[in-house]
Length: 409
Image (cartoon, rainbow, N blue to C red; front, top):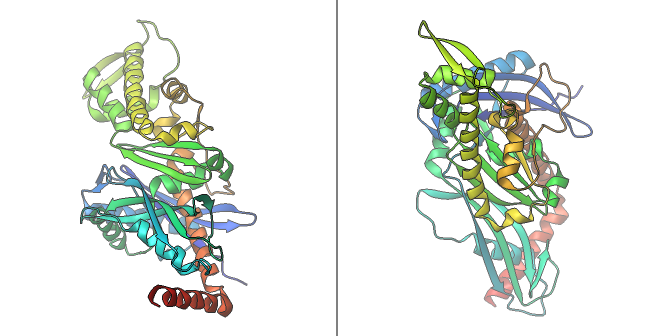
């Protein structure tokens, strides 16, 4: 009997670790075999502030998932986030020296390398590349120019860069938990795999994932990532406003937000809540809480809108906005977002998910589910590479030799 293949994804968030062990069943349905959630306070705005504490939290989450799934985890796919993540467009071009020769694979690789040759600070590195295709003699939208004839070959890329030290610290924390790293994925990309269909990416969709202290923005059109931005604001800002304006301890404000918060409804001046704070009785009027919430969410959505509108791609996202993250699931959040963004807004839900041992709320587990999907795609890519066969490998070698001859002789 064939051994069941499984993938482990660990969503390393600002307030909790979500570890999922998943298997893939045809036709493309993902079953969750086990999960583990551990809360922590070891990351601030994408930066590890307590390496040992984070390793311990990851280890505990993995142990819980192993116990529930009855699997032994050896390697994991993890996510990264933070305002240090930046995207930029890059263009590369070259002249085909011999007009009688076909464009080869080597030519395509060389013009892509030209596009990747950019100047950037020493602490940054290119982490992820989106290829927008090739242009041959002014004709855009060419997926594979190999075998075509032309004088000028160009390539357009979207390069996502990160601060290398931040990523290395995160990797060290994971390895400190006793597991290897199978892959590292930008958070919003893995979340998109869980929440967006290929059709939604094709027609144009903006994904906004609001976390504890970060809001991650990504825009897709024509099936490709066109824009990415991470800004330092999230649900913690709402709690801070409640705490300051109602003069409550932060933990009490967080509890009040979770248990009683809504952006809908009307409250009279007499509607109130009785609280017990440090053995003292406190009264909070619902209308005051409601006004604070509305102002806080308006501030969040305005900041996100300013970041989104810096990209001209937003107007091409005809499908509107999909919200993700715990703050997005507050009652009335989508309606408030529609007012600010001026386009259709809905809350995202995980797609293609099969049986699970327990309910998995989309606002908690979307990124981890996306990591599992990414993991299986990664396995498929590696399998395809090794299944090329001698004929294709020989053909690639011949093309490379022809290109060298043309370049130097």
